[in-house]
View (cartoon, rainbow, N blue to C red):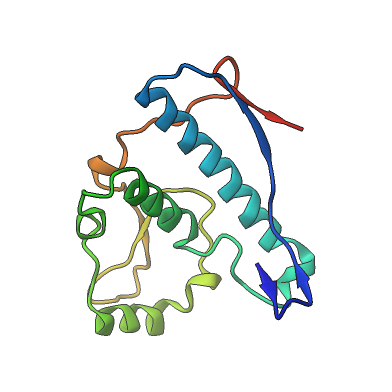
Length: 149
């Protein structure tokens, strides 16, 4: 993240990862590290230094879209976006007009918000991602990997 090269901010972490891992372990560790960095970045964006510049930290779609992007990278041949059943631009704008910008709707998890269609006073509800986007379980730091502080 940066602004016209005046300053640059971001999140940088270092991890120690065991060698000789199978594909399942690699994906599990990759997801864990990806989520760790994603949460750290959202926390940084929510910091008081950036609140006046952006309302982006933990926006309703941030962590969910990061997770969708992770699955797209790991499984490039899967039709990940269509699994999420995106709505048309006109419905998306109607939802925006009814519930406000996504930055004003905070989501501190990878559990998506589903907005009613057509938009109503009921508001968004937490839901689950499609099962195909829950196949990798994040590893717990320990024997397979650890963050180096």
